[in-house]
Structure formats: C-alpha cells, structure tokens
Image (cartoon, rainbow, N blue to C red; front, side, top):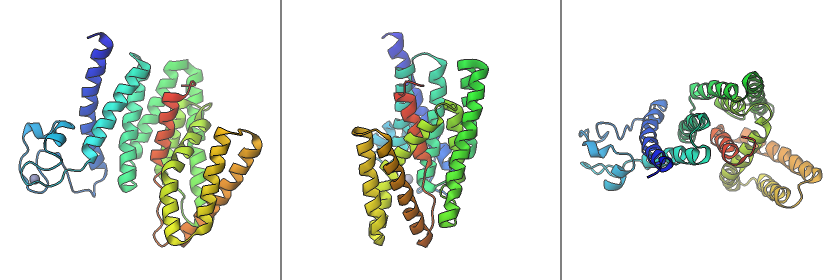
Length: 302
Ligand SMILES: [Zn+2]
C-alpha cells in the first residue's frame, strides 16, 4: 500500500472514532436529552456494555440497531454521524492531500457536523464551536497570506455577522421576533473568518440556495396544510425563477425578478409566522454549513 492510501485508511478509522466522540458531544450539548447510548451502560436496562458494543458503525450493524440485552432501539443518529465524519475526513484528504489546509478543513467540518446536528435535533447550537472555527479561520488566513489574510479574515467575520444579524432582526419588523437564532450570526461570522471578505457573499448565497432545498419543501408543506395559498404560489414561482436564472438566463433582469419574488415571498412567510401560535426559528446552521461545504470543495477561490 502506498503512503496516500495508508493515510486515507487511517483517516477513515480516525474519522469513525471522532464521529463516535461527536455523538457524545452532541448529547452533552442537548442536556435535556436523556438517552445516552452507547455509553458504558444501556440507558434502559442499565446493563454494562461489552467492548464490542462500542465500535463505531460495526456494533450498530452487528447488533442490528438494538441493545444486546433488552433489545431497546439504538438511535440511527450514531452510525450516521460516524459515517458522515469518516467521509468528511477522507474526502478532505483526497481533495487537499498532505497539507495544513486538510487539518483546518477537518477541524471546520467537525465543528459544522456537531452544530448542524444539534440545530436540526433541538434548535440548539453551541456558539463556542463557532467562535473556535472563527479563530482558526483567522489563523488559517494568516498562514495563507500573512497580514493581508488577517485583514480579509477580520473584515469577512464582521461582514458575515452583520449581514446575518440584520436579516435576523428584520424578523422584528414583520413578525415581532428574530427571523433566525443568535447562533446563525456566530456561524456566519465564523464563515467570514474562514473565507475572507472577498468570499463571504458567495458563500452566504450558497447557504441561501441550500436552505431553499431543505427548508422550502418543509415550509411549503406546512403552508399548504394551513391553507396559505399565496405563500405556496410565490414559493413555486421563486424556485422556478431561480432555476431559470441559474440554468438559462443569467442576467440582471432575471436577477431583479428573483429578488422581487424573494422579498414578496419573505414578507408573505413572515406574515404567516406572525399568525402562527407556535413560533420557531428556522434551523439555518445546516444551510450555512452546506454553503461552506460547497465553497470548500467546488470553488476555485478556496
Ligand atoms: Zn438495554
């Protein structure tokens, strides 16, 4: 086996172990979560686990997703996080090879895996992780281009945080509540520090597109159920216009139409949020994470 494949193999194993560790971190972040499994004990029957019950992914498969003793179901989250972490580590190495870039990207993706999961599960995000990513972003840009890198990184941090904070606070105007959680501001700041002022807008745009892929179908379904026809129609028009803009006519006219529809749709959505009894933030960290992921792996500017 050559050096490349040797390192790749080890990164996969390390990735699985880190994924297992991230599962524990995720559970700790969600303190209201009571199911701690796989720990040394089964949460239901309290039976002590054997060593081979704690191997990432393989234990889940061997045990067929159930406790060895009492047959209580083990959450599918565990093997999924382990596999995603393994894939992140491996793909990063395949893309960037033996370099400090690989180390930074692995650190960033790890943070995003934890924040995305807690955001999706409980709309809770540990802002310290975003701060850590932000600081590492400053360091990364300093190594890349010295003082210019630091300046670009600091400006990116400020721009990312300010843009998201303004969008979040626009929610007060329309809905009397923040449009997004505070964590999104931290995460956008971190992304700005990672990619610098020259790249923050494209990355936020990728995040916006990613959010539409996930949030819009879910939201549309809710709107449809509640009988808000205008939002449904506007959403479909917005998505179609977006597709036409990306695939056929990328010009200022289409962009103008897209922005107009976007604003109208946002107002319609926010109005509906105002009427709803149970107000909730949209989980936006996953979208920002996907935007960053796309930029890291597919942009020539990274
Ligand atoms: Zn059990």
